Every structure is written in structure tokens, then in C-alpha cells.
Length: 144
Image (cartoon, rainbow, N blue to C red; front, side):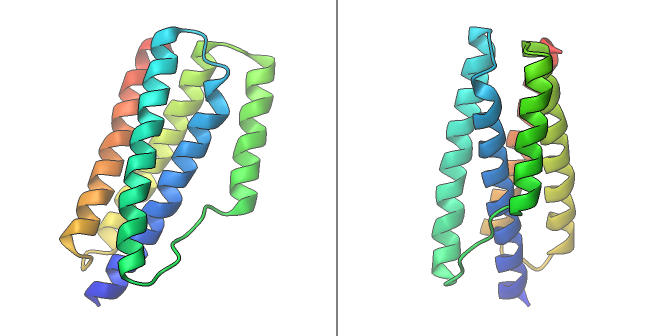
């Protein structure tokens, strides 16, 4: 049970960290304020670092991980581009990132509660990813 919950939690973290990094990549070119670009870039680097940790743990379990659903990812990308094409502003970037971060926090928190038997290292990664997303959402408030 511990190993199954650990792998399931890591898979969800894997998908979440990839979705977060992809979302940041999609909006970064639309960020005008230097401070906003720096916040997004720093958060993207942290996502990439966590992705490496998640990959290492999944490799130990011989698991491929989980990529975000192609349809969900494409829909998010298209929605982002459409919204930013119409309203190319730091406020729109902040709004999109806040919404995405809040969805990530909600989903990852649900998985953390669902996979209670996961090992502590995996739970720690999930908690750090939740904190990263919550922190970015808080940072975005100054641009709304």
C-alpha cells in the first residue's frame, strides 16, 4: 500500500509540476514588468528543480510518471493565448497564473489527502509543490 500510494502521489506531482512549468512558459512572453518576469522565471526554475527530484524518485520505483493530459494541456494553452491576445497585460498574466496556481493547490492537496500511505519523501515533495504554487499565487496579487 505504501509503495502504491507513493507512486500515485509522485505521478500526480509529476503531472502538476509539468503543467505548472508549461503554464509559466506560455505566459512569460506576455509579462511586461521586469518584476513579474523575474517572479515567473524564478518559479519556473523551481518547478524544473522539483521535476528533477520527482523524476529521480519515480526512476527508483521504475515508473514512467505522468504527463498532463494532452487535451487538457492544449485547451489551457489555447485559452491562455486567446485571453492574452485580447488583453495583453500584466494583470491578465497574473489572473491566469493565479487561477492555475489555485487549481494546482486544490488538486495536489486532494491527492496528498487521498494517498495518505505515501512515503514521507513523496509527501514532502507534494507539500513543497503546493507551497510553491500558493506562493506564486500570492506573488501575483500585486499585479491584479
